[in-house]
Image (cartoon, rainbow, N blue to C red; front, side, top):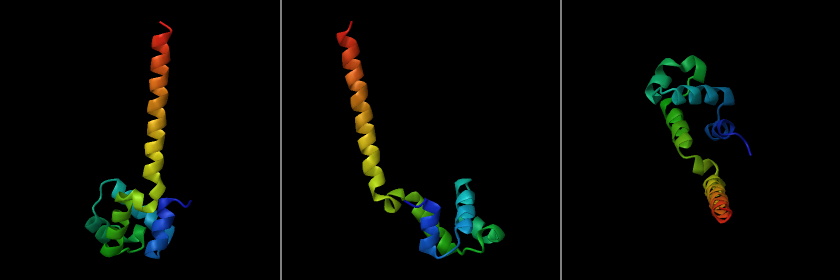
Length: 94
């Protein structure tokens, strides 16, 4: 499975380093208008529309990886079950 930045780059039809730079700015708290206006050199002049689509995709990881949420629920369930079994067995040994 491809990393998120590569998948978004393919969807937007731009190069991956531009998307990675935009993700970095957005993750650090920059707004879409700020990145579009003042960080053109790093993002390859991605426009507002492309940056908004990128931001939307970052907020919806389940759209990029539909099995991700199912997998996380399963792992959490297995972890809780293991803790319950350990707790029960430690009570029995006392």
